[in-house]
Image (cartoon, one colour):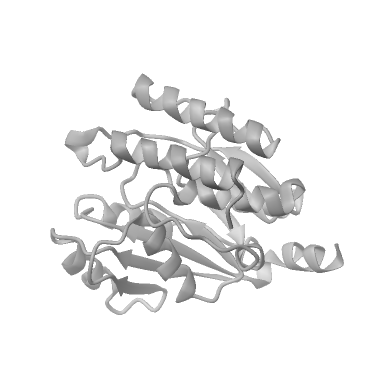
Length: 250
């Protein structure tokens, strides 16, 4: 317990790595970076670095992020030669950074970057190692969104809650803040959208008492706006839950 207490109580002495997996987000990435760099991280972390992992985008994303990173020491650009998926991009980002805290930031503006500050505050206040963002907890007014996606996410979330014996409200939310020490104790395999489920399940199995959820803002996109998750991805997420929640694969 002493080691955990030392890690969390000294968040202000720790660097925050903001990992952004990106694929064809030329319309939104500038705004995402602007919002992230305008946040006040004072008294929460010692410093922060933004690592953008370009997952072989086919639009102008590469040109835009290269321009964004010019003359900015706290923005790092990494790239995949082939499209590998969100989970693979996040792992690439984590493997090439060294901060004590890690947060995943999607590049599509469905989630509001200012919620990172709330998650950091709760991590410090509650002395925790993992914060899961939730788009369904009360306390925040959100736009209406697809009932089908909501239904299946809630179904998958309830199934996962039963399998791991911990009540969670949003399995698939992209916002996850965690310590590098807890990440180093698990091994992740999923390359695509099942990554969120695998990460949450394995961390809960490891240290369920050091985790909480925080309500976050949600501004959903549809396919026409660039939404990338499909029905097939839904089935893959379901299989991820079975593999790591029921079968307990490593």
